[in-house]
Image (cartoon, rainbow, N blue to C red):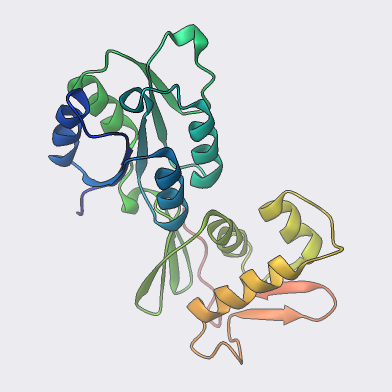
Length: 225
């Protein structure tokens, strides 16, 4: 089983170097040395857990933490805060206040980080890892953005069901505004590029004219979560 993928956001110096060395013994670690870089990585790639070491950057990191929380779509987030705790305004899943030892951080990570196989959703010939946001289709793995992952999950949970545009907009974009659904159409075209052998003549993701879309499976297989 591959090591869980971890995004570490922090400056590499003194105490943080020791933390990072310990993490690399158990996890596949990607390092971002600024909050902006970390948010970009979180949006672009799939991770099993994210550690925001704001203390190493000499900042509370609350704003970066909020941006990460919005980009991660449920991926566990650990926030290492310089303290004091009562001044923290963090939306992370776990808030750790300095001093933080490597042992304490690893113990927290071991409880939170989920390998890809633990949190998968299978529908017909397709599988998605919700934790890592990776779609397996036609023998290929594709990394997803948070919105792409949400859209795919909605279809996977409703095979054979016609989903109208309002429902899709509510579930994925948290709005029922139908004045402009170009974003939905763009995401549908992208999804077809990934799951269809011939996107121009879709076999699975069908358009229901005047209503919305339906995921059809030639041989229906129940969703397994």
